[in-house]
Image (tube, rainbow, N blue to C red; front, side, top):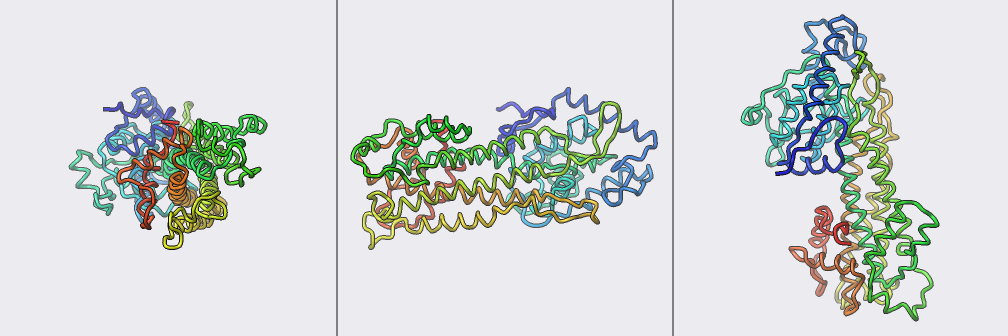
Length: 510
């Protein structure tokens, strides 16, 4: 059994989040020293309360109601009312891995000393995570301005025994009975704990962490698909020369070219047209792959850097400091995360757009360097992969409409108290849809590239491309070479699932 993911508020990684979110059997645990420090921080909150000072969100109303002082005997009720009133999410439920990631991130933030909550609250959240129960958290309703208030409130409702869980069929079921069966008692939120729990960026950050991981996998797979297309189209690897990329040293550009060189090493196809090829240069979708997919890699790196900071940042409010100050600020604002999500959406649209252009070259007899029309042995009687390119084009078109940034579309909320909102969850779900589209477009390129290689046999492609071809043909159910016409849809879906499962990621074999 794997060791639990340790939560200390300072060292959580993207890889930790992905593993724990997607493996319900992997447990998380609080680091004892962090728990002790949190207890000391909580004592500062209680001391501040004892002085009778007015402290936002602890003994006042919230947002526009911050100027309303709350009586000391109503402070627990204040926090419970906050959670109930903010559980206003609507729509379909978030995926299970996103909700698990959300909870893990929230526990990691709350264990930081700036949160000032009781350690028992974090213990209760960790117990919920480790139980395997997943709250029903609606996708819509967060603008990301005071954090993801609605999604986090739905999780808090479950902790309080009042919310809903995801049933086995994805429907909402009352949390109370299943919580009791799992031995989880309802948690009673105390002063500061409600606002600390729901102020934060953890829903959008959870999605960004998962998307960054998946985007990295897709980027590597798309580079491999591009190398396969280059072979099938008998393109030249000269533009991959390291001297070219050293002269323009963007990191991603160099990484892309280097990976393609490894994938294309020892290619018999290349040697077959080294002499006597009348072409001077390949089209941009082949020749400029390092420059385009390199820019994609650099954008993914930027998003990774944002999420790496956010995983271990204090995004709740107000914050407690070592000298006893309890300060209200704006670290819950999701602009950095929303902006990174928008960049990810844009760059994954670029990735699939250049992939679709290579699909077009593979199936178009005017561009495919001698491959039969639509990659069928009997063009005319058979349509081959004609519709594969059309489907890819439709996906790219949809992604382009979704790539409009959400983080610039503020609508004021809370009686104009929260008057600039980043719309981070809208950015997250758009990026998620674009990623899914990009997988399918790269699947289309893999399907067509592998078919193109069939017509060049017995010549073998480079070692890495040959390994990719073997993996495609070795999938179960198999993606067989195209003979008579058959529906391409099952093959596209099978390849997209294989990309998602990292089965075609060259990281392990190129």
